[in-house]
Structures are given as structure tokens and as C-alpha cells.
Image (cartoon, rainbow, N blue to C red; front, top):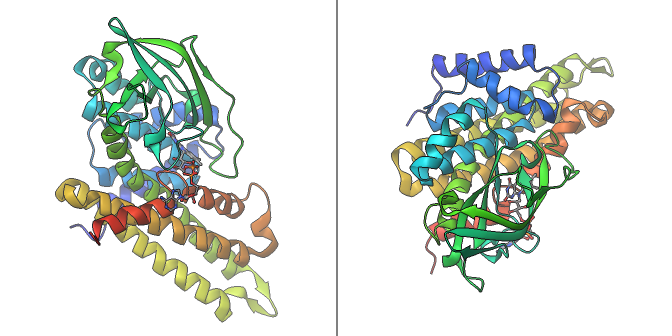
Length: 365
Ligand SMILES: Cc1cc2nc3c(=O)[nH]c(=O)nc-3n(C[C@H](O)[C@H](O)[C@H](O)COP(=O)(O)OP(=O)(O)OC[C@H]3O[C@@H](n4cnc5c(N)ncnc54)[C@H](O)[C@@H]3O)c2cc1C
């Protein structure tokens, strides 16, 4: 396993960070498609790349602006699903477009009555000759308002049954699909979150992804990798917070010396440094498991997501403390990071759900 990053890895990350600082200093949700396209044009995103390269990318982009991590995560999720589970026609039609950013994807399984337990989804898919008629209400679809395709999940049986849940590809421009305006949220604001209503949307058999009943398998496989991107997002944010804190505390003078000379501040910085390194190592171990030990992937991606997001949330509070009043100024790096860090503990499975995944691995009973 690669424990330390190579010079190539480090140069890759530095180049991305420098590129974003120069070209995307300020960025809106409406720029996200262009952002992906620019990352692709500049070979920071390649048609075929390792999960470690993707994680390094998400880390660097999230260090610049942590909310962007969710946009990248969602696009990679759609690419992974289409690459691994879709039929040849869908792959030919969408894979290159998603990789280059010509098309943006949204992944939509969550519903008002199906959050952590996605087997409870109520969206239905009923066969009508060779087509499917879908009806339902989705929430929290990331990239919903900027997407060109939606990967969604529906129940094909007449009652709630995991073995009936199936994945489908939807066209967001269809009249039967309504994407509501962005849901206002605490953090990660740059990536839109949307409610979607599906009202008698008729789609062809070819728009089905995988077989009937493969939905849960497809969603879990995507979310397992999503946890790696989410961990990378947290590591990027924590790295950015640490830099801000070192920068501020070494310059800020109170009572005749810089506040970094006070033990209380030094200890905050020491703890942040230690947890950042540990989070990064777990992230790299999860990337290693993806390529080398697939049976351990779920365990390590859960551990990486759980550890990195919880330490980032904990240290974001300390970062505000170190900056004092300046850490509370709306729109500042630390204030935004504080809000974003809380959101990271919720998606790709809450951190309580990560504990369930981990304890399952212990095979206690
Ligand atoms: C910013 C953001 C982006 C998102 N993006 C997407 C997306 O792109 N696509 C998508 O489909 N969904 C998305 N989601 C939805 C996300 O996956 C869910 O919010 C998450 O799975 C939790 O579901 P819930 O919010 O309904 O909480 P609930 O499932 O209602 O959980 C509430 C609380 O109960 C706890 N809990 C639940 N079950 C258990 C249990 N068995 N044991 C212990 N504790 C438990 C949870 O940990 C949590 O603390 C997003 C959410 C957010 C906030």
C-alpha cells in the first residue's frame, strides 16, 4: 500500500489548487459544469484514472472550497454507476459526456420517508407494454437543478420489497419531471440540493440500469465509493482550516505575543495536525482497498468517511475559536468550513450508519 504520496501526487494536487485559485477564485453553482469541463480539459480529470487520483482531486478542490466536493462526488457517482451497471447503449451515449462534463448527473434515491433506510422508497415503476411508468417524490438530489440526467430508484413490486427496487435513467427535461428550486441548507451551499417530483414519467425498457431488483446493490456500491470522495472532501477542508489557523495564529498578537505562542492554541493545532494525517491515511487505505482488497472496501470507506468527517467537524469548531470573532464572519473560509463540516456528517450515510457498517464487519452475532 502506498502510505506516502509521491512527488507526482503532490505536484498533481498543488497544480489543481493553484489552477482553482487562479481561475475559480469566486464561483457560483451556475459555474459548476464549466468547472468540471475545465478540470477535464486541463487533464486533472482523465477518462480513466485511479480512485486515488480522484480522491486527490476531490481533496484539492475541497481545500479551495469544500462545498465543491459534493458536486464532484455526485458526478463521479453517476459515472461509476453508468460504467459498472448500465447497458452498452447508455454507456455509449453518456459515459464520455459525463467524463468530459458535457453532461452533469444527479443521483436520486432519498425520499421523505426513506432516508438512512433506502429500502423504504415509495416511488413506483409499473410496466406498461415495453415501457415503464414512474411516479414518486425524491428529495436531496445533489446537482438536481444543473443536471442533464438523473439516476433514480423505484419499486417495481406492488409492496415494499428490497428485491423489487430498480435503477432507472431519467431525462430532467421531460415534462413529467419537476425539479424544484434549490433547497436552502446550512452548508455545502455551492452544490445544489433539489426535490424532484416524478409524475407519470414514461421511460423505455432501455433506460433501466441493471436488472429488476438490482437497485439496492447498485446504490450501495455507488455509496461505498461515495464515502471515499466524502472523506477526501473532509480531508481537503481540514487541511484548509489548519492552514488558515496557522496563518492567523502566527500573525495575531495579543498580550505582547502571537497567539500561536499560547499553549491552548498550540494544542489545538497539534490535534488538528495529528487528525488530518490520520484521516488522510485512512482515506488512502480505502483507495488501496478499492484496487487491491475489494472485500475490505466497505469497511475502509466507512471508516474513512466516519473518521475524517467527525474530526473535521470537531476541528472546525476549534478553528472558529482560534480566529475569534473573525471566524464568525459570514462567507469567510473558516465560517463556511464550520457550516460545511456539519453537513459532511450527514450524507453518504450518516456517521451513525457508518458505525452500523463497521460493527457488521465485526460479526458479533
Ligand atoms: C447536503 C446533502 C446532500 C445529499 N445528497 C443526496 C443525493 O445526491 N442523493 C440522494 O439520494 N440523497 C442525498 N442526500 C440524502 C442523505 O443521504 C440522507 O439525508 C441521509 O442518508 C440521512 O437520511 P435522513 O436525512 O432522512 O435522516 P434519517 O435517516 O431520518 O436519520 C435521522 C437520524 O437517525 C439516525 N439513524 C437512522 N437510522 C439509524 C439506525 N439504524 N441506527 C442508529 N441511528 C440511526 C441517523 O444517523 C440520524 O442521526 C443528501 C443529504 C444532504 C444533507
